[in-house]
Image 1 (cartoon, one colour):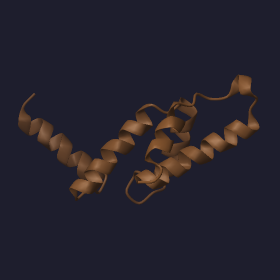
Image 2 (cartoon, helix red, strand yellow):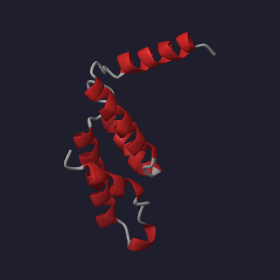
Image 3 (cartoon, one colour):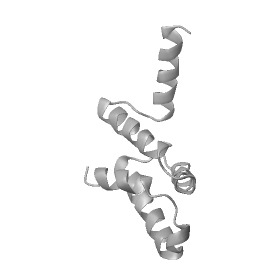
Image 4 (cartoon, helix red, strand yellow):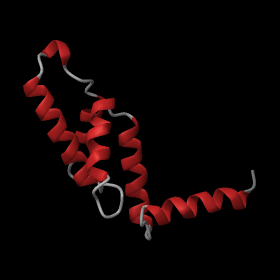
Length: 98
């Protein structure tokens, strides 16, 4: 594949996510990385919220708040034995104040 092909894919990705600044690109990459380590259930929850958003993705603060809501709901509704994985929670805490 050629460089032009990859540039075209990147342009399409950035256009579809409505990213126009370097700051937004950085935030999108971090948010995508955070989503890559979420449990399946938490990821589905986040994607359902994102599908209704204007940009098609949640900014970091909204993403971490959604992860916290999911984690809080399942940590209070499920027994310790059946809790979902906590990987996303650690990442969420790390970026919460950005």
